[in-house]
Image 1: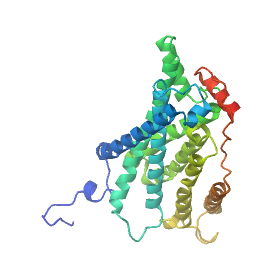
Image 2: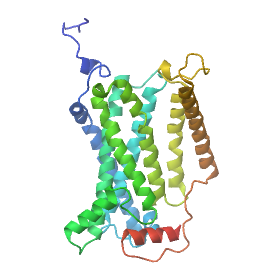
Image 3: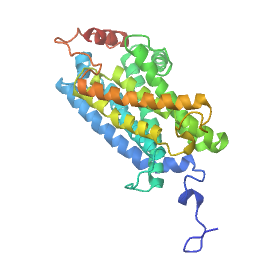
Image 4: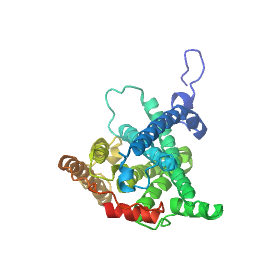
Length: 331
């Protein structure tokens, strides 16, 4: 048994985090600075969106002109701000995860232990930001239904926000269930790390791979429903561009996995069943195709954005069915 210089034994949790059980409580404490930074970014995004809505330059106002008063729709703006900071934190935690699970870089700015802790804390912060995004959207729906009984308003907002299929109009019929899928997958996949000793580390690693699905759903939800990237302009292009490093790291991770069991050799040469080899090969081809597709989207400018209308759509009351109908017409 090795000892520290002072004669004490090293702590398996403190000195070798990957080998011992890391309690959720410890990571929640470690995530406090990260969460504070996320709140600061959210506040900055909120101020930016507020100023653009007040000046009339907001794409949200172009989609839904009745949302021209930021003092009225501040909860909607705060929901957007939480959504954007949540997507940014999701991008960061996915990048860290791919960096840690792929080929080991020769030099890292910080130790691997620190990177692993950052990956866990950013994951926890991302889940909180995603929930706050949904919660503020529900709060806006409650405010919008003023005049109805509180129970009716609360239940309707809950169904629209948290029940798949509850939001039944316009683009939201697809975009909101996609966002709900991201939220409902992120929470168990993120928290399974803390009970991996009960389900076995191998099973946890297999399930944890689906975190990339959470990120894809989050980006898809944003591209479909994020009014700030609704039109085919530079904000939408930047969002597409940010996906390139994720796709490249994923491809590198698949081509050069750290674990020998995941490497792709010639089929039938001790690389496991042919089905498993085929799945890994298809995964690598799909990742390469995504990289090429992203390059085509960014370089061609055909990113799926709508053309900004020459004239603003007719104003309508802030009921989500009417808002989406106006938005669809403007597209």
